[in-house]
Image 1 (cartoon, rainbow, N blue to C red):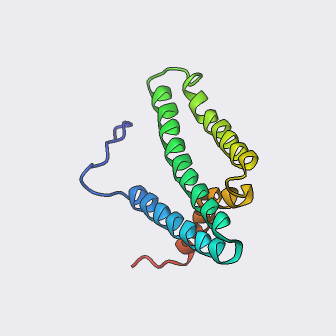
Image 2: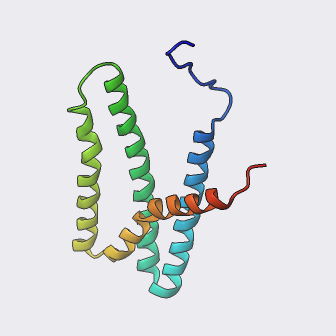
Length: 137
């Protein structure tokens, strides 16, 4: 057998693609459910804050995906990941700056934004539980 791996066919969706799509759908559902609960129990500012945090969660996901791919691509080409990894770390700084701006401006409660931002982690947990109990037939 050859040690080189063959590329995956582009036309067929892979398990990774399906899982990522499912994770994004779960994340959207959790954001909408959290915003709905926020509107009912916390008022319009709290619910809007959850929606804003959810938008940050999607931005964080895509930023993470692109910066991680750039790190692996530079490593595959034999280059150092020094400056490329700055983008990976910069997303944390950007998120902190946005959350601090929200907190100090008082537009939304910072807790609601953080709750919306946590939708990614909650979606990963939901995906983990559903994949444990899902039957592959």
